[in-house]
Image 1 (cartoon, helix red, strand yellow):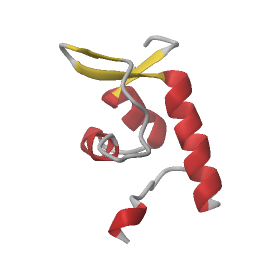
Image 2 (cartoon, one colour):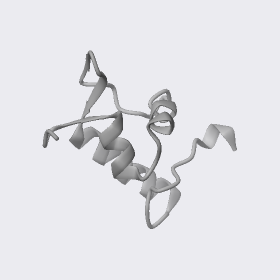
Image 3 (cartoon, helix red, strand yellow):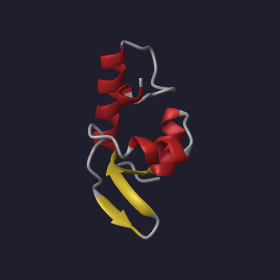
Length: 74
């Protein structure tokens, strides 16, 4: 795994979510913009994803990001 880039699989593993859930999260307005799109799919800068996780934890005041939810769905 690259130390600078993450695909949906790496993000899913990091968050303890399915790749499908990561794909859903990537449609959110607050999700980081992909760094590039490769044959295998979109990739993001690891630093952008880590910042997003930090923001989610702070915004939700939760000890972890294992069940990140979309506030627009209630």
